[in-house]
Image 1 (cartoon, rainbow, N blue to C red):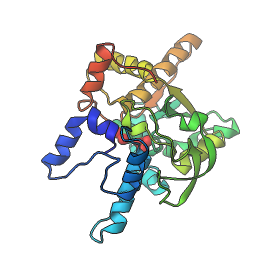
Image 2: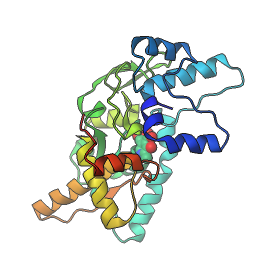
Image 3: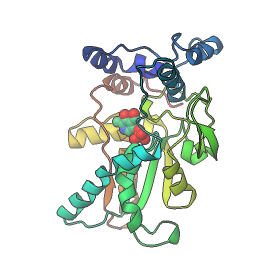
Image 4: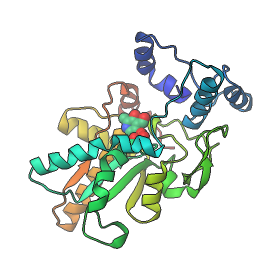
Length: 279
Ligand SMILES: Cc1ncc(COP(=O)(O)O)c(C=O)c1O
């Protein structure tokens, strides 16, 4: 588990331990990749790229161990498209047809692509048509799509994975320890990057203070507490709604509620008590 999340989200560790897992903070001294990072910076909060290096190394050096990636690779995104296929049916059932905007938070790209990819054939995209706009929302402290370079890069810090053509901040980039740990990845899935590069998808970035303002507004009006990652999509959805109001337009906005925040209450605690910093 990435060290920043290991310390910020202890109950996730407890859940894994409850089900019999052994959890170590990454970087750890159990792998060569982890040791190399610790030698450079013993107090680092780690990154998803470092954790992937450690996991790949562990799998490669233990014959009974396999490694499965939960995002970034295109086939993972395609598995997730059941979300968008179902959302399309739900939109029809709600009598709305196609949405005007489809929004998701983007860490590696799986929840966003899962929702958005089934709408690609309907959207105008680079051709300037009138279909739904697709919007990726990322943290401004890890601005892969909005500020990264489009080039081949490793998926992990140590350079053990094949190189991937994507927007990247560099595989050695260690993002600040924001609470949306799932969005602290230096790259993004190639499908998402290609959609952005070719004008089919937009990308916006927000600092975490603005994101938590949206999270609170949502929790107080809807009753459920969103994960900090999810709150990025909510920020995007609220801003789309405000822009529509300003323009005097009706806009149907579909966003992905990717997870609850009941294991992230320490982040809410920090925000509510003025201890959450924008980095
Ligand atoms: C609740 C939640 N939403 C979104 C994400 C972002 O990941 P992805 O871009 O792969 O969907 C994560 C990642 O951990 C997450 O935990």
